[in-house]
Length: 456
Image (tube, rainbow, N blue to C red; front, side, top):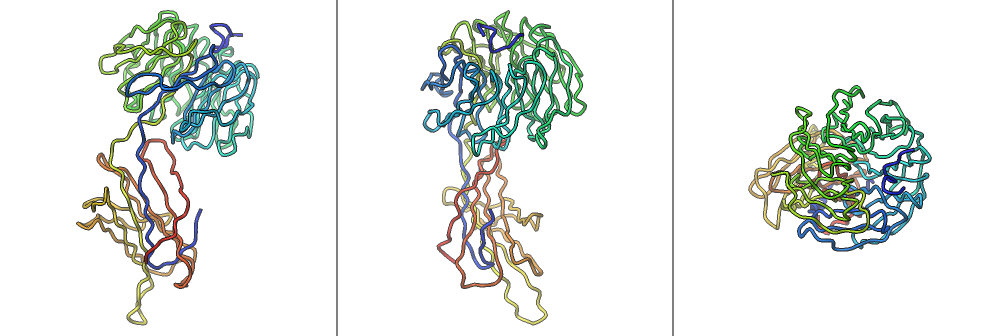
């Protein structure tokens, strides 16, 4: 049985419909770190992408292979083939906070776009373990094909694709039911795979047939086969979806596929026995783990040349890149809800929602604000004081929440604010809800503790 890992040896809170001020700043991200699993030294190297140097080394389990970072960048999950478990790294402290037992010989690992689950391919037990990230426990186990290796999740989180190296196919898992709903025959000994950002195609590296199968996710059929170098192992697709980078273990190079034509447009020499590959969030660089030369090659995607080589641990296997740096300016959005005063008996009930948008203490003018309460109520543009309003007429349920949202643009990060009302009791305490949003593709909202407004 061939296993890639062994090729070299083996809340809604109640408030009132009266003025409520709840600030919701957006969060900017730091520089994108790169995590490299070193299978023979049983650790993970962390690379600073600003300096392309290893900043720390984290001991993990036995024979670490696959690695994946949560969308918010707070944790990294490492599959340890030798100890049949997954190490959970706190990226703030770069320490292992817990270890999760999974199936036999875990190899591949992937996190869902909302960060709620981790899917782990277990090569020897022939199944996929599903980890709940809230509890870091396995909630279910899904039988797949023979000797599963790599895992990838679609951008919408609805499907998981798993390569099966011995049965020469790809299992398709429905994440709603955690069952296999389709099996796609591909080339010989499929190993790494990657999904395009739009979720329309899956690129699968077939080591024994020296090619890449292209799967159409709408039909789950192979629509193209792309010849590459000898012994292709892993695939990474650029964030704009225009290129796929494939490591070739036998020819010590990387094939660059144009995804529009599905042809190889360039070949980049790298280190010895290249295995894992990952692209930075801005698409400017590709990091390649070279298992036999114990280093990582950094490819400049503008020129498709290696610009630097970084020494890491023993037998580097897989690579993952954390969330990228977002240089947009954080914003702060506040929202108030004031009940309309009736001047006449025939006046209609209603509320006036008022949002204010600022950045670094300055009002933002000309920005679009959406007001919702499960559906879109109205849209307004901020004035020179950063204010946008929405008048909501008619009676409303006693338990109603309203949200104002700024979606962000090329200069400013998104932000949102929510207020809730429960009946019409103005003497009750005022409590609101805050939502922080990072604005990163595929990242779920991160909820902060509720805030108690200080003003009216």
